[in-house]
Length: 184
Image (tube, rainbow, N blue to C red; front, top):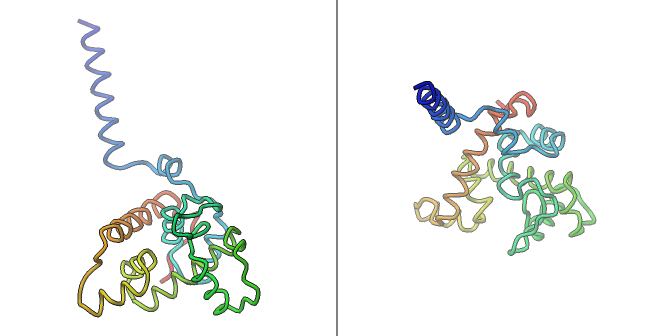
């Protein structure tokens, strides 16, 4: 009888732990699952470009999982997966005189360009979800969707926006004080 009672107690504790893990993960767990690399770079560029640092971290995680050497099949490079032509335009707009493709593998430069671009999209569209859609699908697509009065047409882009929004909440919960406040 004691073995049955002990087994029931163990199973009950396991079920309670399973329910807790599936309902609300503690910050320590989220920090293990969703690391924050280049923390000073993320905080500094978020502050400089008036971005929520949790949003910037979420975009980086979604784009590259914080791997500075990431390169996509479409040719996007680095932490924020910037297309070389987009990055070259950003370099020119921000005073750069000698853009080099290899610059995109440098975390500080890649995040600076990506943060500038994200701020540009937020200013242009005035809405975080639309800006994220443009980051993923391109401004031409988003401009067309808006002109035609449609929402995000690409399922992949809808999933991207939802995922980044979820990651933003995770990074805010897991790293809040370390990341610093969102701009007001």
